[in-house]
Image 1 (spheres, rainbow, N blue to C red):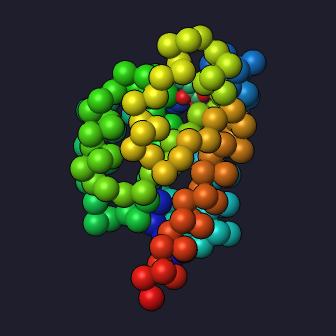
Image 2 (cartoon, helix red, strand yellow):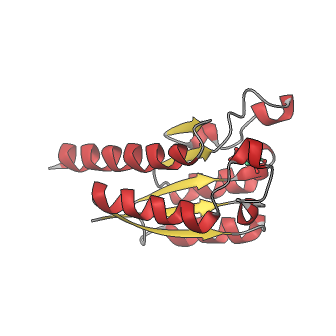
Length: 151
Ligand code: DQA
């Protein structure tokens, strides 16, 4: 079983009531349940955490080294501002997929810049809850391929 850390950034604890036309009506708890189910089907165990604090996210990324095989992260607004999260991801060196519920390229101009994309395996943006499902599948496929190549 691969171990995947799923991190949700600021304001994602409000999903279900927050700007429903953009982010949908599912709560974070419901989204996490979907992610956990898909992950198990794909052969991974996930631990999901949310914080409104940049420091918590940085600490959890640092601590993931040695405990997890990969990270799926929706850094939310920190996507567009956080060099600290980018540096933490570089430092842990774990394969990372960046996720967004909304299509960040169809919205305000300031959302088009991601400090995370350049250090991620890839970015999935715009598919609502499916963005997380696709990210988990992509990262497990990556881990499976990497493991097969090292045999
Ligand atoms: C988001 C997009 C960000 O621009 C925004 O700040 C969020 C959520 C998304 O999932 O679509 O909080 O990451």
